[in-house]
Length: 363
Image 1 (cartoon, one colour):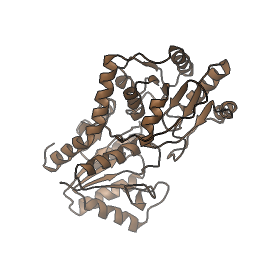
Image 2 (cartoon, rainbow, N blue to C red):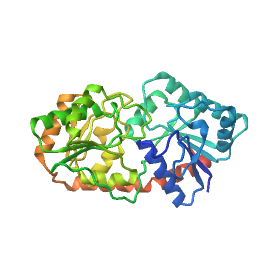
Image 3 (cartoon, rainbow, N blue to C red):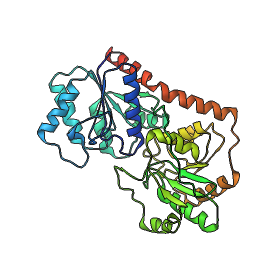
Image 4 (tube, rainbow, N blue to C red):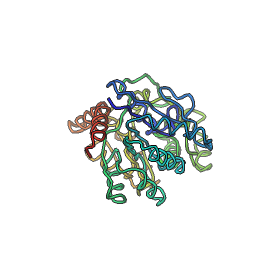
């Protein structure tokens, strides 16, 4: 079995889909008998080893950089997630030091979410020849900008053993936004839509997940938060935090899932684990046409897609979803849910197959 090192800047309890995937993938690989370590900069993250050089917001010392290089040099294969987003000089240094040592292993770069910044693409072009992505949307963007690179589309991973969680339920109907609280995910649009519909007299509660342990500032305009305050006092708008294992129960307990990512370019929604979970759970979904979301929801009948960033369209679709009530799932809906669940569960083996193929020199 190859010695594998998963590298990402942050890990749970930091909130985000990449953090969830890395932890679940590492767990699946360990259950397959793979000697795999998960290296992160987050202090005290369960199931990980901490590399202080990776910690966000801290300038690494030379000794910390050397320690990171030593850990990387000991691996047969390094799977580095989103190397372009933080500390580009550190990533370049590690790659240069490994080359100087004659390291003969494989470096796989995992691109979860992208941006338009040219400096990101220039750095990625020089770091590695092999990339893993998790949707055709991201694969198309990478192949367009880096046509000489090998790009593998692989399933994401999710915890397979759900843990109980109870959503706040101060009304008969609960609408959940299961993303982290941030403007990019359209949280400001959701807060406005919820407040407007509640002002109209609609009978529901809006719950927003991912309100703690954030890497990026939420960027929610103050006026949006003030407008929501009227409804937070009586529980009609609530902000919560639950674990990845609890996400299954939280999403299954909601009546409507909203996911209005605002970007329509390369920084659009890269996949959305939570929307996939909502499909598996058979929930009604309102989402934007951002990134991979239209493809993910193309074969799901209980959904409405709205233009990214369109406040009026989101509010109208939300109003209609409340009126429509529980979805009537089709056989196609159930088949899609089963296919997604199977892909999440099998991705450890898929990744192991890829690692072994790369280490055997097969591209």
